[in-house]
Length: 137
Length: 137
Length: 137
Length: 137
Image (cartoon, rainbow over all chains, first blue to last red; front, side):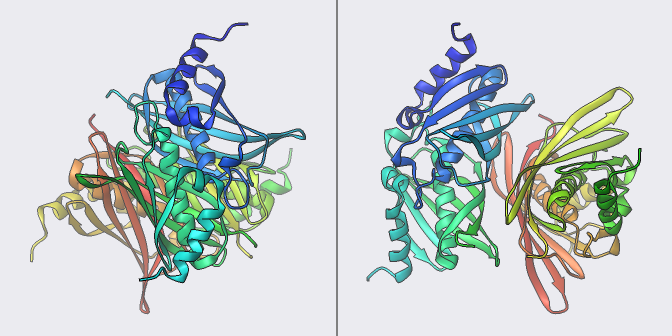
């Protein structure tokens, strides 16, 4: 099965952002209103105890929300995002699933969940919300 | 003038975190309840339009809040942080100033402001709040 | 069918809070980790344009989250809550559904959605998140 | 000294909102970008332990932020607000001080602090942030 137009589009946005390329963000799924964003673990991402840095947790959540909004509204900018750290983020790979909760005329609201993936399975380690505004307006 | 014990301490925590070292976070000031965290701009940090990525904005805010809490409570973990993006973050250098707003027994509340620094001066580009919990408890 | 022990319990907490009684909060459903909280509209609740005041939107979201946490952790206190206003809250009745997203040892994370109910149907008008801490600790 | 035009204006908005009138919100100060909102304690406002209900804490914070934004941008609607509960809110009177942190073209960012006032003095019991959008746009 070939990737959807939406997936191609979001992958292009992902490739255009230097930070996303540096970090190694991978868009693995994209439909209208929902995007999966994945990141393989790297030592560079650790905080003092070796867990995924809360800043990277937030970057994944913010980006997954922004990409979910982009599937509906095109180019957007983050206005606000909130990160809730449920548990230490330890994994071989991370997956943030972003979903649009409400698409308004001026603002798009989205939410995301972050899962840590290991050989033992998946674990929900963080969540968050975001407000995006259209970039052009 | 030599650095304060607090500054030495927070610099040691900063040096122990792989992400902070990779990004180039610099602790330039630390007193009880207040920390200045700076970051020289690098192309790696850009989002699709070349501004500082909202994820990096959040990483600076979260870290400045965490370090401010650490000056009072020692090792802490982020429970929640909120990032408010006031304006595109464009600068040669960024400075996040984190301050403890309330230090409780179980939770430390902090807030931070992020300034973009250019030859033309400083501009407030983002703000945020954080809740930290002590790591040992 | 008679109400569950959980429902009785949460109704007792609801009855014990002066504000909830004044406002007319009704607990219509309560299971482990999920609570439904309803409020019939009254003119007293309006903001300047006659919509449900954002303060009342937040009170419903905060309370639904707190009650959801209480089904798991007993007496709790709000540490943080966030309110996202998706659309003007206009209805004959409002229903907030609160759910625990992560129950940790020291903190319980919850989220809620608020629906406005009219003869025409239900509409999602707001959402939010909350962090609760156990009251006794 | 007679009230400023701004104070008269914000008091008119306050008087026009049924909820504010019911609760007894009093605007005691208003300048461009800053508003003081006060509330005398009443038993009706209690949560289960008799403290000011977190919903009322949020209503004061949201309203103080909205009024601060209104001094600059006229009629506004809350898009998001966050409430941080620092300590049990116990007092004879409460004062929320709202301040605009950034006034953009489409969004106004504000923050507020809530003080509990007793014969013994004032105590900071809560804080928060808000994003407001102009009502007309």
